[in-house]
Image 1 (tube, rainbow, N blue to C red):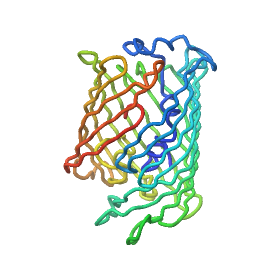
Image 2: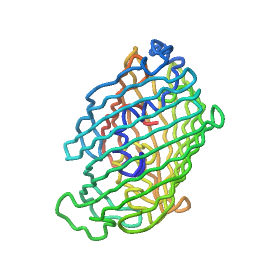
Image 3: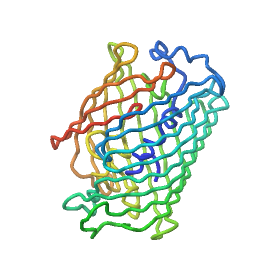
Length: 371
């Protein structure tokens, strides 16, 4: 029940904004400093920037609605990344809703990082089955979840960070409407899930919310233990590699390679999820779930004027029981526009339209970049 883990990743992405985004900010550099240079010397708890806005939300998994979020971004010391405190809530037209908050701190000349996120949500979504248990037709589920997640990291070098992630969540899954429930695992059972494991990050990006150059490699290996409900345990590993290069006419070429492997006994909502694990656009989160996933994405980003931007993107992914037995490729691509929300930090409101190989068009409205 962590960010980017199955369907709950979507929930955390929503309620943790803007705290989760701000936690990744770094001091603004060219060409971003043309936009955000007013914040280059704003050091200290009291010299930050507020971001408060009702933001429209559109997502193929939980529908359309509104996010109401408030965040305070600040830099503790000159050598550290910006820190943040944020609260937020959302509600969509399919009945999904949630509230939560978080804090993310970077201090000690960027040597130490600490983050805490918690919240509660009631999420309605279509369940298509899993790779090993596909359903003939999707059914609508309602999942209630309460969770808390703690991250801590220590910089071994300016680029290499070793950390730990600890989380606990309780979740109940039930049918949202009438329909056959046969074959659906964990239905009607409130599961308490404890997760812990190491994290590792190698980061050479020049700016982590709107990078124009560099590479970011992150890996986590989490041990999950179902401590209430149906007792079982499992491991899950996620490897993400993001790269950024400057292109012609002030554009940025961005890419992501993702790999995920989950244990066979993981709850279905903590399997490797296309769109949830890797931020892939083009398919609803939860339509494709399995114990193994590999994907690649590419994007071209650019700006026009001081507030507006654009992107075009494409990706390919495959899922299966393991990396040696992946299924057919899933392909998608699309385009989007950006609007800058802050004059101090390069934080964008993003609107994307993605098309998949099934000739479906899906709309995404969110804060920040997908990777």
